[in-house]
Structures are given as structure tokens and as C-alpha cells.
Length: 129
Image 1 (cartoon, one colour):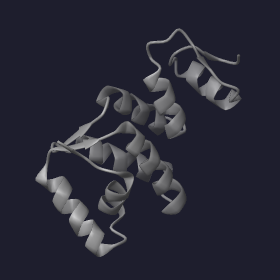
Image 2 (cartoon, helix red, strand yellow):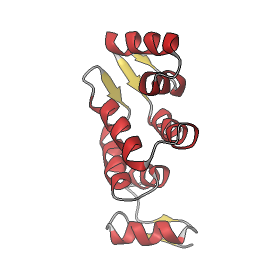
Image 3 (cartoon, rainbow, N blue to C red):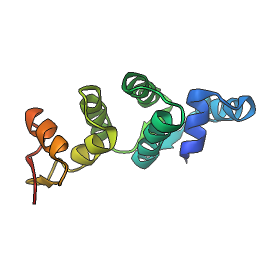
């Protein structure tokens, strides 16, 4: 098993550097690739801010990666839940934080928007400290 960094994943997805994109594709297609959920978090940020992908495009790109048979995603069920909430309007980082906290009694934040979204979606109880 080989883990990849955000830079490899982004090159694979956006192909903005032909040489690096070929190398990334070759590595990923060879299989046995592990992707830490932190790499997915950073990739979402890079796609959104650097490459100006919209929410739908980001969600589709990450979903595609997570569905490739040669890739193992760390804590896949958590990432899949986060992608589902992201598709429903959550910020991806917030969705990943909530999905990663599913075994707790409550999630505390000062982010009022997150509280509203989380409680409306019936995630884990989310409230202000």
C-alpha cells in the first residue's frame, strides 16, 4: 500500500501539469493507493480556492476518487457521510469534522450556520458552548 499527498491527487484530478499528471495517473492506476482523509480535506480546499471548482464539481471529483477500486480511503464511511452532507450544502471541512465525531454526545462550535445545518440534517447534536 502506498499513500499519496494532496499534490499527487490534485495533479491527477486537474491535469494542469501534463508531466506530473501522467506520473500521478500511472501511480494511481497501478493500484494499492491509500488516501488519508486529511489529504481529501486539503484537496477540497485546493480545488475550491486555487482551481475555483464549485461545490458540485468538488463533490463529484472527490466522490470519483473515493469510488476507484484501486484506492483505499482512510475511514471511508466517515468520508462518504461527509461527502453526502457536503452535497446537501455543508462546508466539506465542517461535514468531515461532524462525520468524524459521530461517536460523541454533542459537537460544540461558535459557527451558528453549522449549528443550524447540523441540527436540521439531524447529524449529531450541535450547539454553542
